[in-house]
Length: 110
Length: 114
Image 1 (cartoon, rainbow over the protein chains, first blue to last red):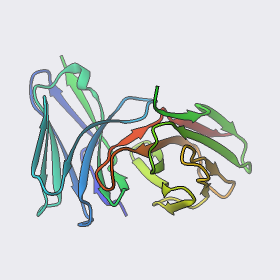
Image 2 (tube, rainbow over the protein chains, first blue to last red):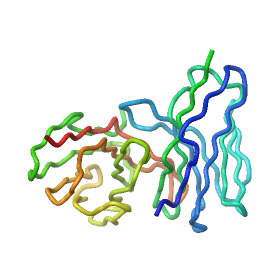
Image 3 (spheres, chains in turn orange, blue):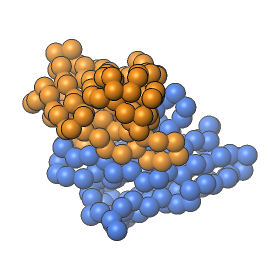
């Protein structure tokens, strides 16, 4: 039973445009949400996070939005750059039990 | 430099053999994790440990075993009971305080069963 779901396995956008990656979760006990970026044959690296008491967190070109009532979060990348091309994982945590989605492969075309 | 070290990076195993993957961290993190990555399935939690001498099963613990005798070390044993062990294995540790940390990952170990 997957508690964190990323329903889009891939996304392709043009350089300079906005990338929107989506994530849904089922466990209402999750209270901390994170996005990670991963390149092939490497471990994921942390990108941005949000606590359940907030609905938005911004860090440079990256913004995470949380809609608790819908159990949905999204990552916005503006403007998208070719170096952003990677697999993005959504994660959710409850008392340090951290679960991941299946990932979305983002391709940013020059 | 502080970080997480996984070894070996590549490992080949014959069917029926147990194999142990090493994970060491010098970040002074209390919690450590093991995930497995398969194509199209993201990262699935095998085991995690919040403190020394304690660990909890994740979603796919069957066929795996762990120990946490030291804060710095969290080895994962893939036993012969694991039916499909070929995968990319990732170890991580948790920064920050309770409930709000981010995971730091090692570079991974790729296990192939021949």
